[in-house]
Image (cartoon, rainbow, N blue to C red; front, side, top):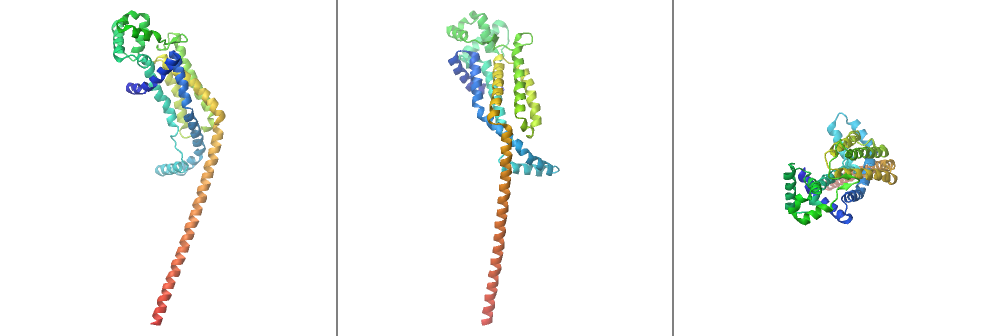
Length: 332
């Protein structure tokens, strides 16, 4: 997992580093990055909303097949696949949108944990020596938070790191991990006011899900939606637990993301109303089935007429040959 975080963290780190160069503020760089990410994902969110509405309208046909072939699972699966192909529907079409934030989160965790690498772009040898100074002087073992620990320790006793030169000192002194009184490099704990941060994340997470489900309630008949509801309500609790074990910079990314998600759902609902999309999709499916039936009848009619005409021609030709043979025998 750490290896995956690092792979994704490198390109994301350069983006956050660029934003940090522009705004010269660590927290603001994370916030602007989150806003840009949400803007980039708007088209995929629109696509997911349309896909959800189409699947909801499509459910009536799925229910018919489930009922008709309830005792024949293999035939049911065959008919469902045929139905999906006929109407160009993919049940998993919205999954990518759900996975992208998870992938980005993995990279952001690496970016927040390793600011000396991604934000300050210090050399690996310099970073390794700084971590070594911290661990040897404090007796703390090396951990994922090593680079954050170095920054915090430097602010308390910069003389420890004199051997690394003024370049190191100037770079570390320039980065400020504080935001609204919280150190984004620290991990929240129950014994301090820092618990406000993960609790706020939990509340916003639940709120974003509640608003989304209320607005998109017309899509409740989508296959697997009941299990999705359980997962979606479980995820805020799971993320709250994670928020208690990661730096508050990661939790800030979550908080801003939830706020933007709520705003996005409210705005998209005005332009891409799920109920309107569902009704339009239902009309589209009904018209497609009518056209398919009409085309099938026409084809059968044409094929049937062709066979009848062909048989008649063959009979007439056979009669002509027989008559010709009879005339030849009579003449002889």
